[in-house]
Amino acid sequence: MTIKVIIVDDQAMVRAGFAALLAAQPDIDVVGDAPDGRQGVEVSRRTHPDVVLMDVRMPEMDGLEAARRLLDPPIGVTHRPKVLMLTTFDVDDYVYEALRAGASGFLLKDAPPADLISAVRVVAAGEALLAPSVTRRLIADFAKQRPAPRKNPALRLGGLTPRETEVLGLIARGLSNQEIAGSLILAEQTVKTHIGRVLAKLGLRDRAQAVIYAYESGLVSPGER
Image (cartoon, rainbow, N blue to C red; front, side, top):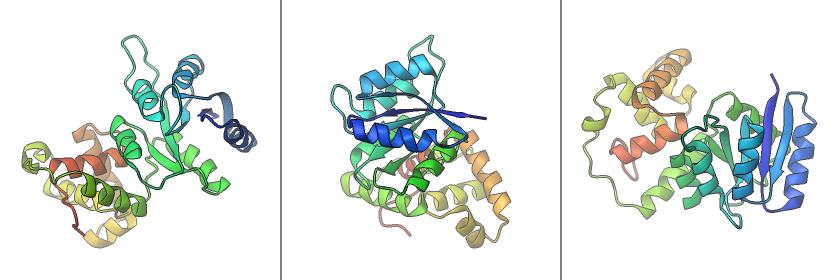
């Protein structure tokens, strides 16, 4: 199946470079591009891409607002592409808010070409592009800027089994599926099953939103390991 992609970035050379790289892949089709978020939303609504590569900082409309409009469209608009944020910064508040809005992850602009190609495929497949090391930095950044949540996690996580709650906590601490399996002495496939159930019960799109949910519910606190 061909993955349809659009590229939204205010730098023409970035758009052209990414388009050339992705279009050279047999399973990826670049169907459009735009220089700002407003036009990016318009192009997306017209071309119905599977994945939108979205720059964070742009004139007219930034990537955060554009992501919100794409992922929470008005009544009558049913298309919701996967959004992969592009940034020159490792972790910043824009990226955090984009993940909250439903973006599937983010990628540094200076990442190797192979990482960009892999990222598009991973996101198109419905997975979150949020590496464990990035997860840890995201939580650390969040902890520095915001007070610890005061809500009782039992009030919001009561639908999860004790094992599912444990798995969610380990995801939020930045552990990979393999590390979670080792920690809980489970098969990796069993871990994947638990994660799927956690996402379904909490109504979350992916691993990225699970991290944020765990922190905001109070399940994970700043500085925990």
